[in-house]
Image (cartoon, rainbow, N blue to C red; front, side, top):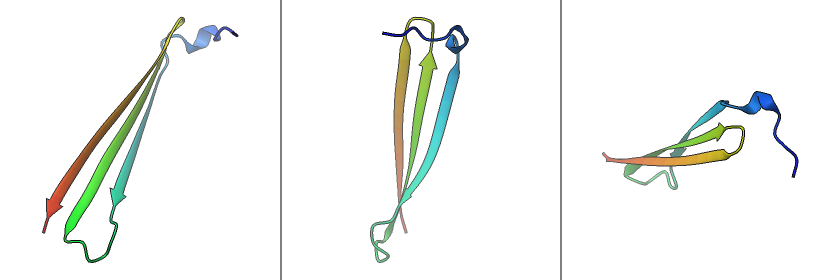
Length: 59
């Protein structure tokens, strides 16, 4: 297994992906979802966090 370069230590990359879902035009409810993916690199490990939140608003 190849070792990670030294410059990856302590690096933090964050991706925020807003996502809106509307299955049918006649749907009375509006849906919105927010996905967050967080990558954390250190000299000996990699951590990946997934977050999901959704809101439902009826009109």
